[in-house]
Length: 309
Image: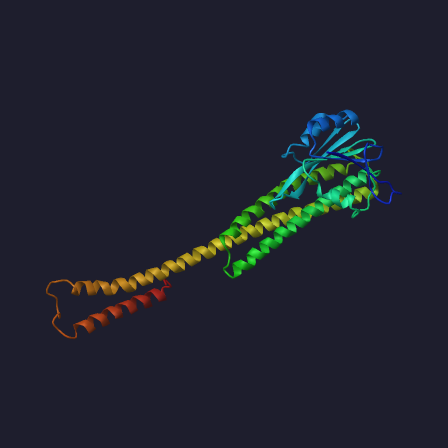
């Protein structure tokens, strides 16, 4: 689907156009091959780069063909089933046009179309940076949600209420954070190359925005790494707690085995159908019971002193 948006400094709100006009923003979502061919012919673009935008595994990078710059980044989005994934977004910066191509709905578009962000399509370089700002802010929001989920699981760990589902959630969180990292880290290199000004002209204000984007991006990377460490620490702590609980259970079972086994040793001997000492004496039962009880107590005291139990 190809859409044309236009807004200049005097426009009170964004306009949706039926055809392209100079200074308009061309936004393309889930394009067909025919639509890509139309764009390539109309704006004299390299079809191969346009097709790269439809590759789900395409990584952030920069390409320049003549007067046109191809800027690949990745943005995060939430699927209908709640899963979070990243997908490529292509900026095509030309002499008098700006084109964005994505496989799925770009959440940042809503902020621009609904008037939440003040912008103009005629200031193409600034518009690119504003879209990148929206993408970085979305990453920050998703990372913050992951942090809250991790803290909630950590609080349950203190009360020993952690469940198997929490570990399944950990796997999901780790996958999301690792995917964020694989997108954010190459984006840093892309932003640094943008500062050179060879791919699109930057004014002093634009350079400040790129530097802020770099700083925010690095903070997002640090947050991802911090959350991954927290997940690893919680998992390790739970493993240690589980091993410790298992050891305590084994000690209790061992103590119960000793308490049961020692009396049975003597009771089984005097239960045999053979001649035994004092078997005819009335006090034999109490002596045997007291002796076995004494042995059990001595064993428990020795085990306690050596911290076996």
